Image (cartoon, rainbow over the protein chains, first blue to last red):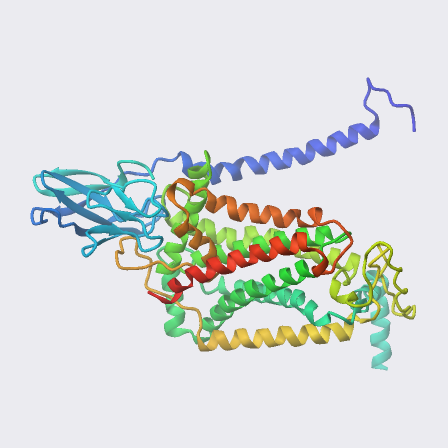
Length: 163
Length: 389
């Protein structure tokens, strides 16, 4: 082999470099669109949808009542997803809770005998005002973004605080 | 005449493909007589994975990976397609049996010290395969899109959200958004049928190639009572020499623990045992698939307030951690399993001495036994939830 000249590429070095450049080109050209589409949902805002819960005039004070609404599943899908809405009247204020546990997002339900919201998965407990009173959940029960028209309640498919 | 013709054709083919020597190499390796029944666990794992592959391929002709159709396509099987239901049942039950058998295979390897030099990478690829099989099990559990599947998807995709800093990013990447929805199902389907298998099957190839390179005699079982690998002990008698034909590639790659005392041909002696155990397991899987089948609950309903999600039994220990770990320590549910996998990967580099006798290796056997015990206790603590709906 000829002595290595650091200032000039040998034929072998040139071929080696060329092979690596060819491989890198393929990897980059494939990688950009694949990674791009995989992470694209992270940068898309979910389309906000509103659903009518109905007239909540008959909800008793401190007696949570469950309603079910439907939202579009989102993105390209024609599916509808059902969502549970717990309407809770606490004297002068009204809270509109989701059934989503803040621990692992299991379906929370109102347990009248406990007078608490209970998550059946890992035993999370929330008071009637949604605050944490037991178990592993790190945050209070999520509340829907909502509005009233008289006593008619409308909810959006998002929470006041992201989970 | 015909026989001669066939022989000529075979010679022609052999000249171009070397099929004859390949077959010999594949079938007539010397395998130890002792421990041969324990070694059927590896081949049973392989057979059960292949069962997954075959039934999985055909399930893609029965199943539609869409939130509007997935459940309906399986409900249709239940109503109108008994054979399709059996295919689905085999897929489910062989997955359950596979998880059990791969665990036994791993425990056997651990206790018999087979992961030691030069077989460290057999163990490392095996740990990789174990993790990938768990990944297959968990992604497969999402797909029926019934209540069990949906809530499994919700909880499991939420676990990585507790990774510090990038948690919600990982969750959104898997879910394809903030919530479990149509994209979650398509992505998980893609991961289950292509992404993981595309890594899993080449890794099986590597695992088997390494096995063949070093020979099937890394385990203490082969040598039990015959030899101890401690200083000052006489070198064991050389392995019984076999005739040159068929060629045995069992090259001693280590001075001690070179080769077992007694060997026989892989084919047909080991294949007989392998075949017997595998066939027995397949029969059991078939009976379970027909008698019990794969359950399908009501269609996924995020608005439910009377459904109690029950974890799949194979991640019950992890789910039990979710119950036990208080809110301030939730990242532990990631640290413990991840740490467990890292320790498993490091095992052959921690336990490097030549000693393979489990009773002479308390430094790894005792912590290992405690780790197994820990998982068993978590499972028992959570087991009430499997039956108590």
